[in-house]
Image 1 (cartoon, rainbow, N blue to C red):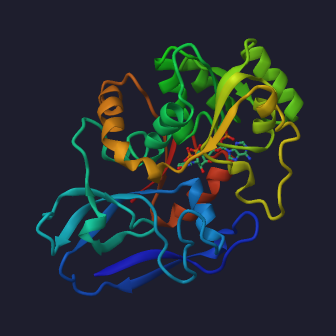
Image 2 (image 1 turned 120 degrees about the vertical axis):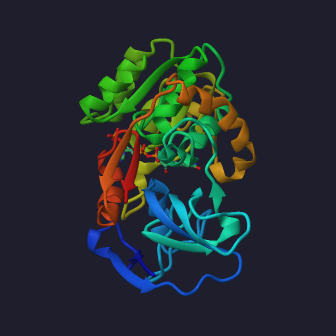
Length: 332
Ligand SMILES: NC(=O)c1ccc[n+]([C@@H]2O[C@H](COP(=O)([O-])OP(=O)(O)OC[C@H]3O[C@@H](n4cnc5c(N)ncnc54)[C@H](OP(=O)(O)O)[C@@H]3O)[C@@H](O)[C@H]2O)c1
């Protein structure tokens, strides 16, 4: 059986060119003991993958030039040499960026059984959802009544973070780009704040207008002017969960830091980064709490779906231009 997969032809400097992604094919070897073969139905592209294209180890190994790329995926077992799986089982795994994956079964997880579409386990009930829950609850220690600001608020992580904060009884502000994203946030009861064509000072003024009583929790997905503006509106004892800084992922040169980090001292604030993988033992608690609310439609989510394996690089690159509302997915 043939598998089509993407490789990286070189490490990009700046925003990757789509020509760096090469679609290749190989005939898969017979299944070894303990392996399974999976027909992928959904692929995930995520901003963190840009870090794996840098050639250096961060918290995860870089992609190897010329080797199949990896990423979150949902598929169906079509052949198995492991007693834990049978043909037809729906599973999640990291053999994405390809149509057919052949993997050791220990890296493959059966899909949980909640009343949601299978691809939700790549988004609201998968890694991005778990990231939103972890950052808000464990890192930022968000509590009822907090004034909460979230950047990239209409994305996969941000759109759950704003809703979880709302459900706690917080006053929530969400930063986003396009008008339709701001309108969606407003429909969720979130104060929308546009960052487009604004200086850090203008964004700070807009945040102040949306939250005259300051910010207790900042859920950081972006960095850049969003961080500078948020720092200037912190309340005493504020907590900043640093989830990501997408503004700098494609920077070819070092980016300037915020000019007002001293606000952390003045406001006696805490700023902490985190990686969701370190908190994965809490995934069952997250699922237990969040999945029934998603299934009941109390927590909502959006997806931006591109069709076909060939659209994977384009879908990935669109993340850096605001081309997605909610989770960016590829449907095979
Ligand atoms: N720490 C962890 O373990 C962990 C895990 C998952 C994700 N993350 C991080 O969480 C963040 C969100 O990830 P996601 O998967 O939910 O992606 P996402 O928010 O669904 O997609 C990225 C969004 O970021 C916004 N954006 C892109 N470039 C921007 C810029 N220069 N300035 C402002 N906004 C920009 C765009 O929305 P607009 O149209 O609003 O600009 C875009 O739609 C990323 O920083 C990611 O690296 C961290």
